[in-house]
Image 1 (cartoon, rainbow, N blue to C red):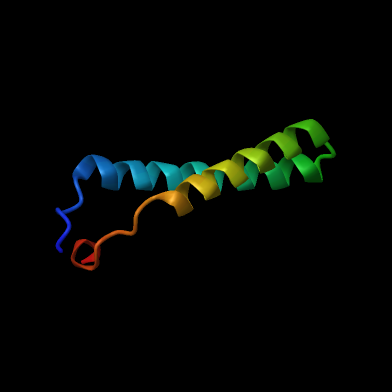
Image 2 (image 1 turned 90 degrees about the vertical axis):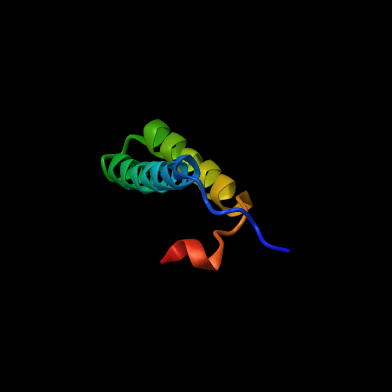
Amino acid sequence: MTRPPTSRLETFGRFLLRGLRIGASTVSVVELLRNHWTGGISAGLAWLVFLLVERRLPPVPADAED
């Protein structure tokens, strides 16, 4: 069974999700280093949610990675 090719919107959404995940982890580390616990923990939870969402997405077909 073949899957339809990945749309541009889906590719762009995955790119944005990865950017949000990287941004949330960076903000979390910076806030925790500045001893701003509430902001650091909140950003860490946001990172965890983005990570879980990204893992639940169906895998990208092998031919779309080229």
